[in-house]
Length: 262
Length: 305
Image (cartoon, rainbow over all chains, first blue to last red; front, top):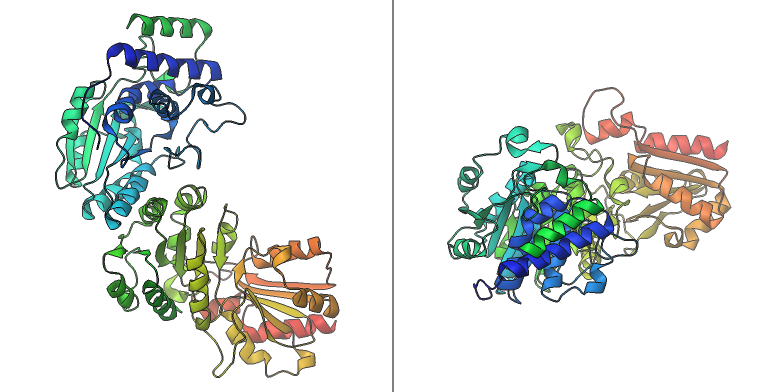
């Protein structure tokens, strides 16, 4: 693991968020809400936490834009390539595709696959006596997929202590809140019941994420990130429609202004 | 075949490392492999979706993975995991299904696999192996081990006639000469068919070929087989699989592309559960017209027409 420092200041995060907004605006695509809820954690992981031996699996593939921009922020994706996002001929599709980038190991987008893939990478590392931690980011709605729990059972039984799962708890899913759709709470209790060590932190506070990461023990670590869908753009925050809608010219102008003021 | 499969993997384990997953199956069969592999033998529990996904993850770091279960549980339950996690990435994951076709007999339809290779052959990078005899397992395991791509291995029960000498393993093999058309067989049913076909005069029986590696493509059909189809003008296909996506359809397309047009064609295939009654593998074969005597009688009738 890399150094657990807090090197991202608010203006840096805002500038990356602005680039994410630009990508989605220029491509005319939605899904921006869940990208904004996940961006801070993904950016922090890639910028400050992960080292060369570590791996990241984006299970909530609909936040591909946030992953691409996080990789852009650390110099792994060029600005030119980022401009191809969601366009014909791109490697940066709306959900990650196979063989697209050396730091994107898996095609995801169908929910419920990422934790098992991450568990497999973690198991492979253990079998080969290789160092490194495997980080996986799930959505909260994704916890309705049975395969997520199959993976957790497996990870606990195999003692995959080199596995860390984050859950982006923005509380909104495709057609309602997680409370309305599946009575998902108390999710921490459920994860603990499966034998994971659970931490609950503000998903927009890198120092709190670092503190949670220090709580590694003999079980897989699950960090529930309390987040806000559409975080950082006032008119998007907590609103389900930003799971889907592209931005109008006026909305994009307002969103960019807010980043400039951050 | 399961014991032959286990023996082949035990032998392989002495030559190269791999990781083996089972979906909580293999009692009184896979114990030697468990002993040989140690921590690389993993019982993934009754969770086939996760087993396939984890295997993909392990394969992503450079390990060859084998994942085993009863056939419908390894191709049906985790289909999306096979498609997305294994095949889209072209990972070195071998799926092994025991009891292909009606192999699990009266255990019921949930345990049958009569749509497996048709479905799997639609996937990117996927190859399928349907051994006809236990003798095939050693060469097939060697081929699978050397290949770095996804594959599915459908196991069944060896029905080789006692004392029968097989030709060396090949994706297509001629097992018996005959003049009443060409019969292409998929899987262990070839053994039971040989037992009866060999008792008929050469002029009154079909030439029997067995195909083991799928999908069938124009370039994969041996010229010797094509030549006999041209010469006899009759082609028959026997498989314990539904017509849709089966070898009958794959081969028909290949022949069209090759410009080979037999005047007589009959596809003997699984049709499901016609009577709503259940029984042994032999019961289902008979109900579906797949029993060797019925197949040979129908071929004799058609070829003479």
